[in-house]
Image (cartoon, rainbow, N blue to C red; front, side, top):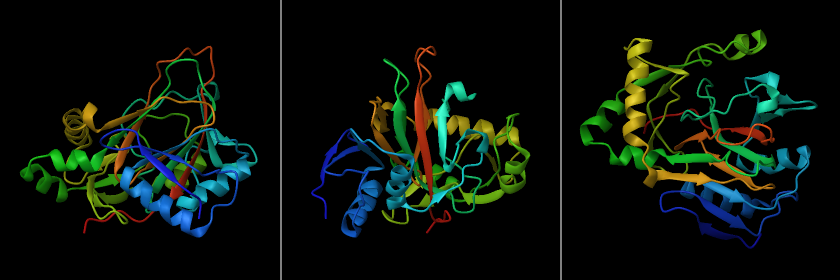
Length: 270
């Protein structure tokens, strides 16, 4: 087993992991330790990594089987399980709080980002602890959320989605608005505002309620902000967080992240 050193980065979530070279095979005890560290800290940072696409896929598999991403126009040529997050690839920074791919029956356990080209300033990624957000709600609101379900489909309003992705991933999928973490056992608020409609509400009422929740729940004390360095790998636990990008960087510079998502469990409330 690798000699891990795990250092907290924020009082609510986030930890830096030292002692692991992700370009090399990760043994079973280290895999287990990293899986538990992710469940505990919700965001893990590995510095100074140098990875080929094949090495990156192997490293990501520590946290689950890499799964297809549904905006296939942004996939890496020859490595379709790696998405390219790159404004010159026609993308806008995802600046709204969200958790990835909730329109899947088994949504990602984790989103894994690798910093390949980093602007000189700005362009960070923020991660919010949604189990802390859940715990801070009133008992009445927690009970209300526990009774609600969402139907999740592809983002509304996007015009660049390929028909093949619509056909494969456009069917609405039902999930609870509060889910139990399969490793940690805690509860967290779980939804993606632009993918979800709350059962029994109109789309307009759903968005208004979810927007109000986000405004009230996501406070600085539950947010870790990651300022990117080249070679960083950031692993985000999608089962108990939301995240967002920041577009506050010079677009004459490149911000290129490689993204892998890994399959998790079907969300459930125990």
